[in-house]
Amino acid sequence: MLDNINTRCPLPETASDRPLGLWSLWEMLDTWGYSYFLLGIGLGAVENDLRACIGERTFGIAGRLNLDAHHPAVQKLDAILIDIEKLGEDQILGAIPANASRLRAKIEVARRSSDDAVFGHELLQEVQRLKNDFQYVLHNRFFYSLAPDLTKFYGKPELLGPRVAKKFPKARYDIERAGNCLALGEPTACVLHLNRVMEIAIHRLARRLGVTPDAKDNMGSMLGKMTEPIKQLPDKTEIQKRKKEKWADCRTNLYHVKMAWRDPSSHGKQSYDMKEATDIFRRVQDFMEQLATL
Image (cartoon, rainbow, N blue to C red):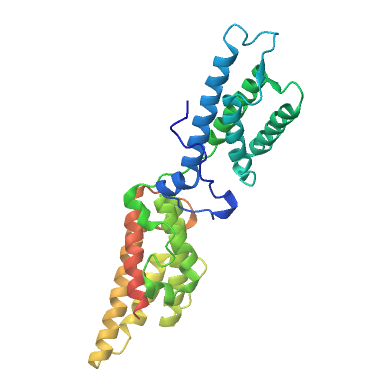
C-alpha cells in the first residue's frame, strides 16, 4: 500500500540534541513530524496487509496462520523496524526501538529456520502494539504554541535594549524571564520578574542620588525620597540643567511605573491580566531606558 511512498524516512534529532526552548512549527515537522508521520503510515499499511493475509475468519481465534518470512508484507515491516531501531537514542520513544529490534530478530530467526515461516497473527499483534505505543508516546509529548505577536518577547536577554543590558547586567536574567512569561501567557509571573528588575534599578538609582533605601520601601516611598535630592541638583549651566531634567524625567517615568504597578504586586498580593502586564512592561522599559542614559 506504500509502493509510491518512500518509507525510508530521514531520522530526527534526539531529544538531547535540542535545548529546551522555542520551536517553530517547521522545526517540529523537520525534526520529528515527517519521520514519525511516515512511520505511522507504514505501520498502518503493514497492519492492513497482514489483516488481508490472515483473513477475518482466522483473526482472533486459536488457529495460527503460517506466513512466509519473505512475504512482501514482512519485508515492508522489516524495513520499517530498521528505521525505528535507528531511533534508539531518542528518549521520547522509550522502549519502542528496543521492541522493534526484538521483533526484527524474531523475523530473522524465522528466515534462517527450515520452515521459513512466521505466525501471521503474532506479527499483526506486534505491529498493532508498536502503532499503539507510538500513539501513546506522541499523545504525551506537548508543544506550546505562542501567539505570533508575542513571539518577539521570548528568549531575549536584551529585550529592554542593548544599553539597558550593558548598564544593568544583573537584571538580564529577569528581563529575559519577564519576556518569556509574557510570551507564554503568564502575566502575573511576568510582573513578578519585572519587580526584581525594578529592585535592581531603584537601588542603583538610590545610590546615584545618595539615598539609602529602607527594606520596607516601595516605589511610592522611594519617589518621595528622590524628590529633594533631584531638586538640589545644580542647574547653573546648560549641561547641569539638561542633567537635572533627565533626572526629573527619570523620576516621572518611575511615577508612571508606580501608577501602572499598584504597589501590592511587589509583595505577591496582586494578579494581572495580559493587558496590564504589557502596560507595566512598557512602563518599565521606558524607565530603564531613561535610567540607562544617566
